[in-house]
Length: 136
Image 1 (cartoon, one colour):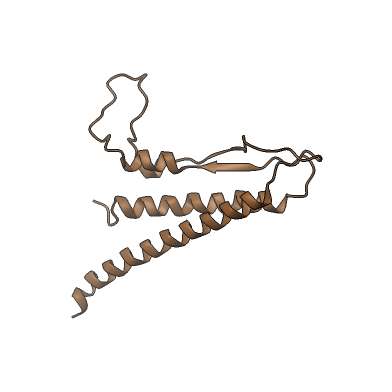
Image 2 (tube, helix red, strand yellow):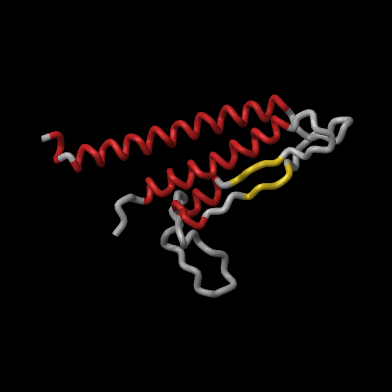
């Protein structure tokens, strides 16, 4: 039995992945003037969604070793995909960083990170309340 539920585990994984994404976005921004630098992307949202069974596929089981996995293993086994940005315009110096897009992605990621932190804080606050015997 675990002290934390599936949601807390998902939020923890999301925070770790968002931190990685923040690092990659920051590196892209820092290298905006570096010749031949290739902007990178981080994707983990689809894997997290599958691990959480958001699409209601829990009832599916693999019946053959060659079948694709169906989110068994949970959120602890999620790995981020880091790859070169495929949809880019290459500058004259070979750099592929688009500062406007990077700044927008950085802002979005920051907002989602802060939201996940707030949700964890609320869950831990509820646990603290329960442990303290409901405030008695």
